[in-house]
Image (cartoon, rainbow, N blue to C red):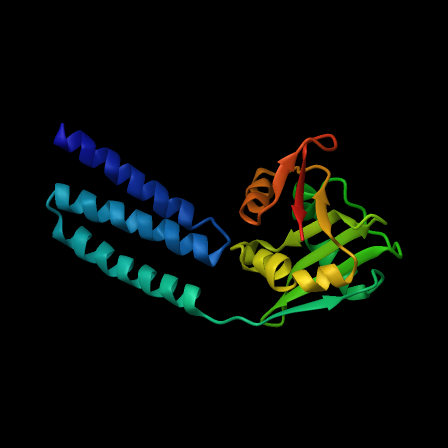
Length: 210
């Protein structure tokens, strides 16, 4: 029985390590890899394999070190508005076209005058592009809020909806509204950012008061 449990734990450890190698986010990589190391340590103890225990204990310490470094690192965020016709914006949208379509399948880039358009720089790298259509009643319909995979650790979202809340209010925004959400990952993100679900639109919308 003990051998069977050890085998299962070994497989779980291998699965965690395999998954960690295919994620494209540094934070997720460190957490998943650390879990894999932890399971391998338990596995090594159960089968009395000291080299496995020592190797994965060392790797676990490395992962913990980098996790602490990630959480303590100070990053510079900047919000820069754009009109909609800039070449850089079109290049960005074209480069991430497929992934954007997965999250915002109905989005089509336009240059409406009442749009709120901005990008978020994270250490001078474009991390997010945001487009919302402002209605007269203070509601901003979010058409696009796309963060590149590498920076999906919620820091960009907190920067937009917390630190830059006054910027949005200065534009006349009192309520942010998603008429529909197409991706489960984005749905989870909205919940963490304080959006509440409501019956609105085709797929059920999300709203946040500012």
